[in-house]
Length: 124
Length: 435
Image 1: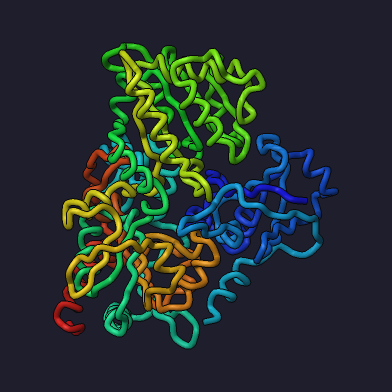
Image 2 (image 1 turned 60 degrees about the vertical axis):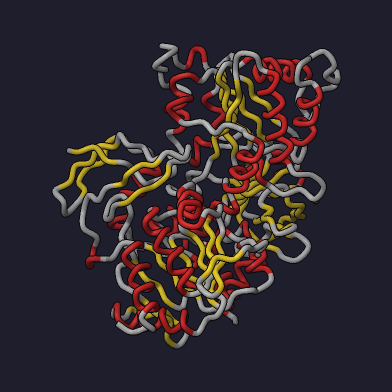
């Protein structure tokens, strides 16, 4: 299903806090996560043990998913982090962090690890 | 117990009470969650207190001399260095960064260029007033949050501007109307009262709302009956009345409005709307406040302006400032750099993968006080003191007001401030690279 991805600042899912005080596990717990409207949660046949695969033209990530009444239908939000920025884009020399067209599907695959992303970046 | 200014975010609250013996901070009173976290960073488990360089693919702790030697080698071998960050450091450190960029013929830019800096130039050109926190507290009667969620980014901003009692009006929350325009019902909506206006705009439809307001700027009669951008007609009428009737209104703009669009410029359209309203207003005006998260995001533009008369990004060739159309994004996108010096920020986390992967390919020197995604890929990590707690200096608040930050305790291992470290690098490179 097609959705709009918005990366947003959330005080309880804050990357500076997690990098300063957290562990790799807490980074993943609090940042590799997305929020969708409960109606969309049902439409995607999600259950709490499943994860969400979010993909755009070039890349995909796998993150945990939580219901949030405050997120409008058709939108998925993620805290700003290295996970959400796998999907953010560059458009005419500007950075696009909001309303990025993505596809969502439920998956049993594990959440993408922080070290996995870093390892990819370290390959020069 | 003494009063200090908090460097937890760009609001720079100057009413924080700190109990300290000069060695440790034992109590912090009055800080918000972000401010409290800033003070906790002093003893955070991921604090970096020793310099590191990459050896055999892994970061290893080394002496300062070895780390500085490695950093200067990278810089000397680089012909087009990129310097970026500088919004979590003092103005003195920003000045030292610019001096270093000039010495090594680099391109220097701050986080503001991908955030509030975009508004500033355009607002100046159109003659839109930027306002101050004090002005809103004392005189404000309308506060509009547009694509901004201060409750989770600058937690005490609404406490100050919405709930404080004004000096001249002698009234507070009871006469201030809050309007929030956002596609998502953020935490800031929770402070809304019965006379406030919550407008959930459809995603990517802000432009329709702005264009309708521009057309109907003086009259509420011909608003389409079906509403605009998911907002119904009655709410639009109320919005128009507030915009045209406020004596001292302010629009607080967030990242939500800065997003690029292929066929229009939302920032320009919004600023034109403000210009129209202000021209037609008889007794009042609407001004702007730009939200920037990092504590000195506003400072870099002031320092660049006072040092070189240029706004924001600076590029040097033959130690002279040159005119450039390049931006931070174009420099990285086109890989027009061969090394980077990152100061107090985490671009590997906050830039899109298409850029962070290019940044990671070239040698990267990081100056920061705690671990980040960028520290995992850096060639050299140089730790610094925490500004506003372990070192002092000047910063510009989000409303462009300069505020002095003071030192409270000594840093661990006598860590240098960002300014000292950048000046040390400059001194070494100025002399050819050896101490």
